[in-house]
Image 1 (cartoon, rainbow, N blue to C red):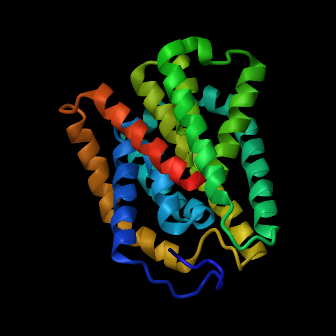
Image 2: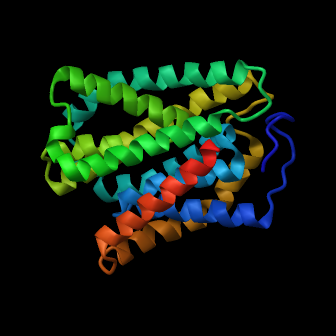
Image 3: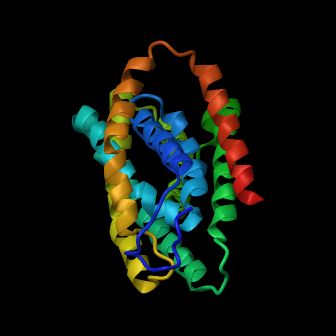
Amino acid sequence: MIDSQTGPYSAVHLEPWQYAWGAVAALIIGFSKTGVPGTGILMVPIMASVFGGRLSVGATVPMLVLADCFAVAFYRTHAQWDRLRQLAPWVVGGLLTGTVFLKVLGDGNSKKDILNPVIGVLVLIMLGLSLLRGKWGDRLVPHSKEGTAVTGVVAGFSTMVSNAAGPIMGIYMTATGMPKEQLMGTSAWYFFIFNLSKVPLLLYLTMDNPGKPMITLPTLVFNLEMFPVIVFGALLGRWILKYIPQKPFNATVLVLAAVAAVKLLF
């Protein structure tokens, strides 16, 4: 695992198994942005297992932004900007709350990466929401202004702390009743804008506490190395979607994500 205690610009060596699992996560990220969105949650515990919880958050964001570019390129003209404007202030509030949370954790004296169990819990909560979505449908979705506010804050906090806000935003976006292309376009711009917004916050946390960084030069090099894998995943996702049985595939992803999340807890 990457040693994050020696400063943000230290040399790093990844074992072959870590590169392999990192490549799997990059493939899933590309895959999830071009038609198989339910797979995205699986990459969160995988990246945490490779990098450790804290560093995995920052190591994942640049790959998400790169993958978001594909979704924006495909659906950029179909966004419902009024939906984004309604959510934006609340998501920003969640991002800032998550930043404070990460700062407090980083300022603690524990040498153990206590963000691992936090990510595990958040992933399990999001998996629970995914299952409830299938059972309750629109009854799960808060339609009031207050509900929109809560959704935005929770999504912002979850994405800042663990990059795991996909299920809650999937529930919210689907329940709006938008046509498919508008839903894809609105989601694409949402994730691109707010994933990009996390970068300066992660850099601030790194500069504030260099001994427990969120983004490092080695993780950025890793991101560049994974770029071809993300591209391949994005293209593969568009092609393979026509050939895979969706329900068994989704169930397999949820089970694997749950196992990985429980591993983070213990």
